[in-house]
Image (tube, rainbow, N blue to C red):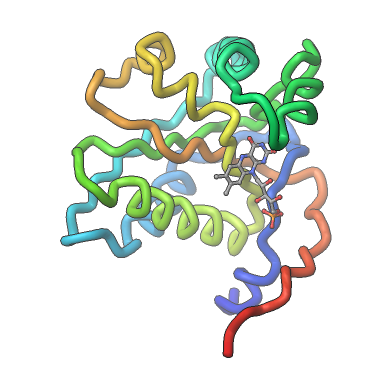
Length: 183
Ligand SMILES: Cc1cc2nc3c(=O)[nH]c(=O)nc-3n(C[C@H](O)[C@H](O)[C@H](O)COP(=O)(O)O)c2cc1C
């Protein structure tokens, strides 16, 4: 797929079929992710692939409680609270896999590095007909000891980009971007 078409066509997908994603496909997505630039070429990223729906269900439940307990007042909190308080809301939308990008090294730019890897991964997924969505709702819980324990992550890793991936039930229509500020 042409890169401009991938950039323009990718959307966050929140509705998936139950079809799994093969190991070779996941490996290709990770290969695309690790071509991202990184500060001082540190490449601090690690990739944790979670397919176990019971684990995703437990993380979803605990991440919702954690967000509700720790979320600052104001901003989007009222909207978030009504979603997070809904017992039927699954933060991973029952996607078949979660690919969590974490930093396994410290440094001032690990968040930028992992976010760039995440964007590569999401564009690569779209280019082969898969859907994806960054799940920020999972982030603060995954950064707790309990969250890291659930995935067997070392204490000093920093979970940054939880990306769900799967076969979309339908692709959302392209977003009309905010007005370009390029001069
Ligand atoms: C850092 C970050 C966190 C996000 N967290 C969530 C989330 O928890 N749940 C969700 O459904 N979408 C989440 N999204 C997806 C955004 O809502 C989405 O990217 C935005 O609405 C623009 O839509 P598009 O991705 O289809 O262009 C997140 C996106 C980013 C970049």
